[in-house]
Image (cartoon, rainbow, N blue to C red; front, side, top):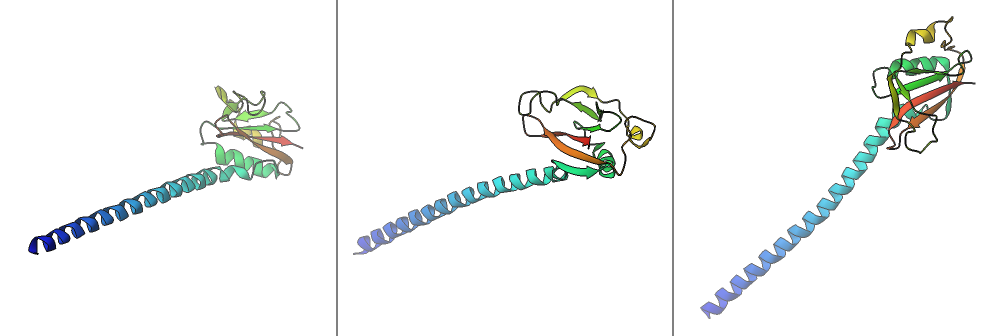
Length: 160
């Protein structure tokens, strides 16, 4: 009788141990899936926040003073360019970096940095005698330029 009781206790202990291990494994797997989902959501939020500074310029009409503020705001961004086409300079001037916009959107090369740093200076944008002069009360159509990797590389402003 003593052996049967001991065997029952040992088998009950083994059963409870297996049940406990199973519960821990199930909880761990579900927690792992929840963690992966949270990480993906966090990455999406981070991407949206990093691009939030540019969404105000995506296919909107802005004033010349907003264009000047954008030039000041993005001058230290690196690997980024701003193109401004004024009424005096229809070709447009690139500030900071030259970015490829002549090839079709979505193709390889579109939105890529070309020819290194631009030679245009922000001070020309405030100089009324310069063809690059940006009239603070002028209206500009803004457009965001993304490369093939969906990274924002430039903003273009075209005076209306």
